[in-house]
Image (cartoon, rainbow, N blue to C red; front, side, top):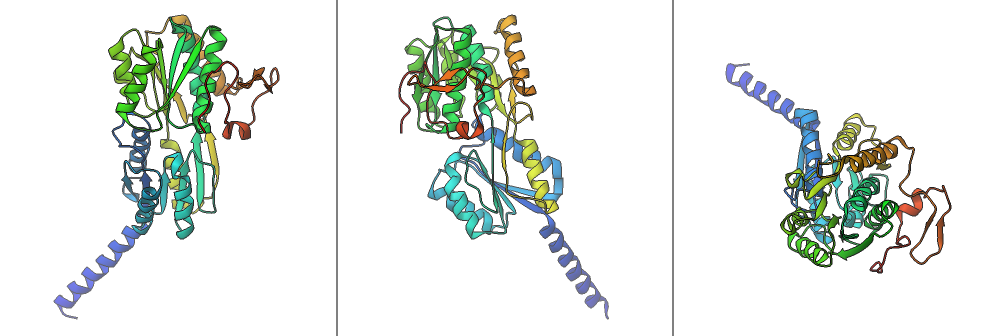
Amino acid sequence: MNAKTLLACTALALGLAGGAMAQDKTKAGFIFVGPIGDGGWTFEHNEGRMAVEEHFGDKVETVYQESVPEGADAERAMTQMALGGADIIFTTSFGYMDPTINVAAKFPDVKFEHATGFKRADNVSTYSARFYEGRAVQGHIAGKMTKTNKVGYIGSYPIPEVIRGINSAYIHAKKVNPEIEFSVIWAYTWFDPAKEADAAKALIEQGADVILQHTDSTAPQAAAQEAGNVISFGQASDMAEYGPTPRVSSIIDNWSPYYIARVQAVMDGTWESMDTWDGIGPGMVKIGEISDAVPADVKAEAEALRDAIAAGDYHPFTGPLKKQDGSDWLADGEVADDGTLAGMNFYVEGLTGDIPQ
């Protein structure tokens, strides 16, 4: 074998080895409903993606597509990601549920993880966080701090996840302030700063001096800041740039440990279809720092509530509770079951207005 042939063989061997190493790298894909700079929901999911990269280093490659509309566009994006060699794909919005199921059926060797949905398959898992636990803490602070007894709530879509949050916040505001009133505006979007700002301004004009939101941008925070004497709460991420006021605390979605664990399961060959619904205790939901704008006694009460939920000593949906129409729901001391919460489509007693169908 002459020198030229030896070099060629060596180069071929190195190329094959490099290809093998490239194939050994696990590829994780992420489909995002908003931009990664939204400051809320998608921002935190992208933080989880980057945590995967940091944790696994060159053993993993991540890819993502942001601002993917729910529906046919999502199905196309997932298909392209699967064709591109993704081993696991995280689809991070409720409206991605049917597209995820459809694409997963065409790619049985790819693992899919759908956030906040309820449809599973052999290669589809579901995961969500018990955001309503954080809403209980927010409701307590809101009920204690309002001067007008009016709380405004910006809803995204009337799905169980959002309805649970409204109910939880109201229940805990009402416990500490029987005069409390909630007004809900449905924005019919997860991320649209203009719509979110308009909703916040409308609620403030109606007298609300507390703004809660289940939408993803910081626009409501900005509207509260502009109005003055209005407090707000970070949604999905800390939104600390608006602290110490109007943002007095936040719900933080901590996806990183879950994403790392599920990618590890793909690497290990131990991945199985499962449903995960974790809250404050396991750390999937965090309560952002309660600012000094909150009176010390209210802060202590809110932290005690947070800790009781985390320890499993208290459940935010504990009776006695009635439904909006006055019918009995939970008896004294009775705790809501997960099935009812997962499909919640009713307001609790005291909330006004109808849930859009």
